[in-house]
Image (tube, rainbow, N blue to C red; front, side, top):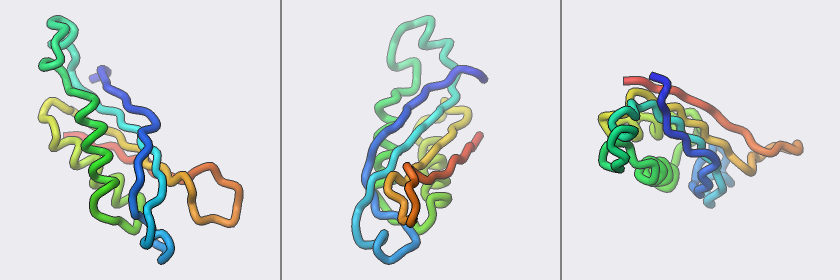
Length: 120
């Protein structure tokens, strides 16, 4: 399936990280979501009910980041991918990128992140 919905640079805050100072306060994250779905019904009907609502996908992703804390970005991204697949049975696959915008490194780094892809 080559049809896909893309959400780029969704900014959300969450409490995630392995270091003690990361577990005490929220920090900014940037998310990308790619969702593979057959868009033929929506292309023919021009009706939102015939596709996956990208607003609902964005809300699901943001809710995962704002919910439970994770020590590792890998765990956060995996949970997000699973939640997205559960959110709509029409999704055939999802790819999630999670970036920490202020990583605790003594170097000039714009972000650090992980990317996971899950299929049904």
